[in-house]
Image (cartoon, rainbow, N blue to C red; front, side, top):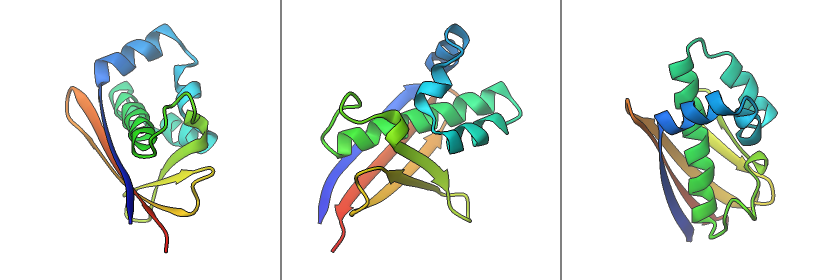
Length: 120
């Protein structure tokens, strides 16, 4: 049974601005595993897309779960990739839920959608 659906959109310029203004911005959003993937990206544009996608995905999850990021921590939500490169989300405390995620980017925006369902 579907328990929630969430979507979030973020401007890439906003993320780039936050990174330039606060060197610890990415540290607040990304888990250690995500930070390693972020650091391996070779251009600032690709890093902004990656960070914006993770930010949007974590916000979308909080909406699908019916909780705000204030009640969930960005660090408790991790987005990695499977062997095919598709995003996979793991959330501490939500292991009994199936989580489906999609992330996309354009020149200006990153968008993420999350659907959660109860495991049978």
